[in-house]
Length: 216
Image 1 (cartoon, rainbow, N blue to C red):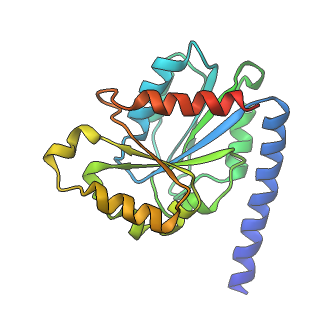
Image 2: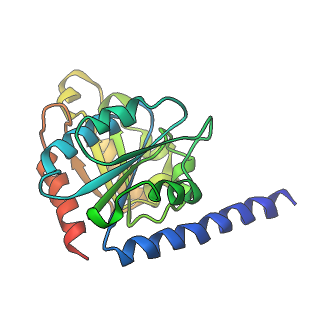
């Protein structure tokens, strides 16, 4: 019985995600779902992305957190539409939450929607939100073993941002081991090495977003 309940929950989520995807496709909006563990630098990376691209790519943000509006406030200071979702303890966003958030956004004015999921490398990878792409962010201080420890996330995403590469000289992060594990799990995954703090490698990430939007 428990397995049936779980299956029903996932199916219900997929149904709503399909509704979200159809609406966003009709409006010509591309959607990126950012997934990472806490402290990987999602919000800092998102802030820099917005500052550098907001004049070029009309975008909006949905912020997912357990509690507080702090990340939403950080994003809002950059002058882009943002909706904060607080899950109240839930470990991930789901499609129904995103559907409700979409009602609060000026969808006809944007071309790119970035969803910052709750900090977690487990649950978010299993819940479709209606996105075009899932992107996983790993940071150097977390260690090079994250792909091996969280294989489902790496199997279900096509792009990984290896963030905080400015810290590589001061850590024992083994880049070769990291790439070995990534390739073993997902040979098609692309990895971009970036530093949201210094800006190193960020242009490749921006080009990815430009290409996604232009694929409409």
